[in-house]
Amino acid sequence: MTRLTLSTCCMALTLAAASTSAIAELQTKTVEYQVDGTSFTGYLAWDDEFTGKRPGVLVVHEWWGHNEFARNQAERLAGEGYTAFALDMYGSGTLADHPDDAQKFMQAASSDMDVVRARFMAAKTLLQQHETVDASKIAAQGYCFGGAVVLNMARLGVDLDGVVSFHGALGSPIKAEAGKVIPRVQVYTGGADKMVPSEQVAALAREMQDASVDLTLVSFPGVLHSFTNPGADKVAEEFGMPIGYDAAAAERSWNGTMAFYREIFAD
Image (cartoon, rainbow, N blue to C red; front, side, top):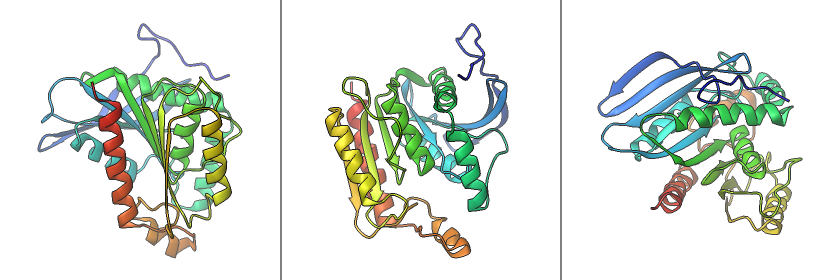
């Protein structure tokens, strides 16, 4: 079991603003925090154009680690009126630029589900404590590895309003149980994704149906893994990976997610 150091706020999150910037009304802050003695680096984004408390959204990175793509997603969410926190599941400075390293980092981070949950919950608490956030309205979205993380948090019964998986792994040793899954679930996957074959997609649909989970699953025909990431084509060419960006699928999945959030966060 991973132990999370406690404080008067129920967990010790040592916040150190490494950098703060303001672009027009967009506010961003790099945040260092501690979980069980390990340092992590996340990224908060919110827009001062929106007033009052607002829902918060956690962003869980791809298998590469906490990178610019994850931060960009947080900024996009801020532009939509949410406060977003692009969390770190690997540890400060752990970032891959080769698939072999990404695989190693992902396997290490996924090997103990208690650790995964502790790291996710630390980030959730940090987001909920931000002055702009309505702590009762929290969702999580993840990409690739991050998609698997948010689905597993739903399976484990974490209190969230919704989770969204973009080209995430759908299989898991953890299975959803009726009455345990709290959030509504959306999944966007590529119909030609060799990393998430049709058997996984079908198995997830059966699993969630058997557990009476509110699931929306969208499969884009002919679309490859990593379809939301504009950098996927370069990676595919460099390493010969079966991945690729798809602008239409990226836009449709984003628009669907924004509609989902408007619905689940409606007063």
